[in-house]
Image (tube, rainbow, N blue to C red; front, side):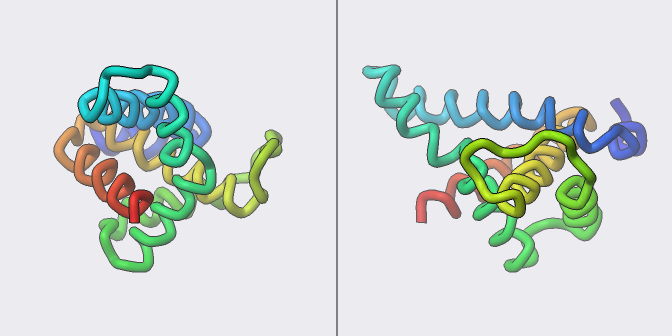
Length: 130
């Protein structure tokens, strides 16, 4: 899909696909590191895929200027989008920032920006592991 078309998608749609893409990337990373115990991998994945982990990564990337201007705009647009779903185990602000992060991941994936997608995911991993 061309970048312009992907950018015009509803941010909830971008977050929906971004959530799946990010979780798959994290699972792959953890399996590559240690494929011996799936239960341990699942437990380790939680810190990366939780709202708290995603929001922490998103905030740090914005603060450090890691994101391109258009990426930050999209993240903020998704974060500020009115939502009807309420988080179960996170503050609303954290949940919305994590949704913005997922929307960015979804946008990069749908617009076939694989190299940048990998950079953003690996930066998020590095931030969460600090």
